[in-house]
Length: 260
Length: 191
Image (tube, rainbow over all chains, first blue to last red; front, side):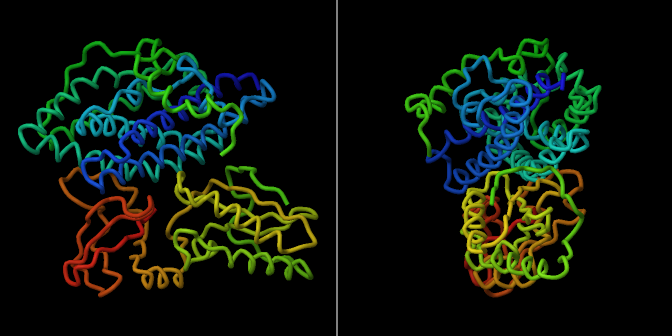
């Protein structure tokens, strides 16, 4: 199918958001502010990794159709360099403080839930099936991250300041979530991809409602990193991704062909 | 027997009627073998009771077993798949293929009543219906807990319980505490 390379790229975007954010959340293992939080962060990461694997398994099959034999699931996760990753810039941002981690999570979760909701109606049966399943898990994620956004935002003076700073710092990475490039445009027209631009209004309303409850100010719309077609979805990343991948991929790269 | 294929959608709707003749007997032996495979994290419950096995059906000369994953990242999934292969390998004679079916997605509503009783006996509060309420808009309230109403303590039955953490010993459970008997317990979350 002529659309296969575009479809591969699109599915990779979905996969890499899950894989990269799962790795970031995994960095909290043993360092969470409380045992329950440690467990919760890694369980959310586990969901995202499981979803990432379902997308990667599909990406692998698509690639094998137009460029046989294609790469394996592990090769796609562990042997691609930063420039080949297609995740959003938002999810590769460092963990920072707990407020930074939770702000990143909430901004992403809210978008993720809406995206999956739209993808559940995709004409591509496999995409629709994975999205419907993942959506059930992400719903729980956003309940949790919205809850934390409120608790920290409307918490102490210090937690409020940290949450506001986190939101202000991450805001410039949110524009990319709604930017539709040529790859997506073709797939949206075919009824396969979700029209991300149409999610922006509902996302803003949902985020504003939580910010309002959290006594957080909505940041002004300034420059949006990656929103003009040169961002994570096109393989142009912030400096943080490479460092993260070094840790994520070192075992696979140091022991080529190792099985576990 | 082979495994690993992923199909997005059910090939047939609902449980499959057993074919006639010796086929029915063979299907029954497959179901029986599958009923012996348990969830490694909740060993009192079989994968049939959990709703993981979606169908057993004839496909030409072969037999097709469709299973569906629970949580996307559940570490038990691979163990379960391998246990299924082991269990089916005990049944000789015909080729049995195992396929993973993604839609409709698994739901805790498929957990059998008998299994709910066993969960309670194991100290795990069974999930409430995942129902249409779960499709409602996300609540924006400061809180605490999933909007499922009170969760009954599996030990003393009290409804005076509080959420401790949204995730418990596994991704599929949340941690609660009973304010009457004071025991902490796991709640199997609706999915």
